[in-house]
Length: 159
Image (cartoon, rainbow, N blue to C red):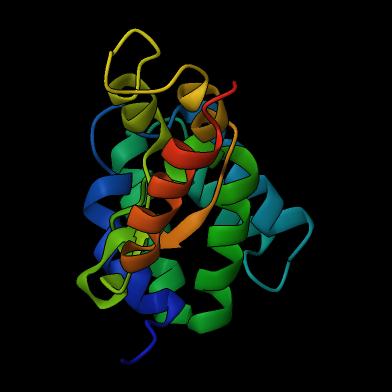
């Protein structure tokens, strides 16, 4: 299994990131400012002004920024992901590159969906199971997950 570089991830994530309504104007501005202020070697003042130009549409500016970072190299792409995590964490957690086929050995549970499926009102689910899973931000190997759920069903009946 080969690890994806940050540049590879950015190529994969660009259509998602530039989708309508994914990132707000404020989030993009904060990302640009972070890359400029904290890492001026990533974005110079002139480049930051270009990518924050309100005369161009947000989508065009974002596409230009992502393309610029890809051309500049791995460290630039890595710092973009760091800024994205800081300023748009919910979006960062749903990036396509986080769920690539290369990562098929691991399964990250979507706790929102699991919580709805494991409702306390469901007669097949023990009371309190939803509470336990909702507060368990864990990445579980798909082979282990069935044992964890069996453990929850067997040992937490008193909740």
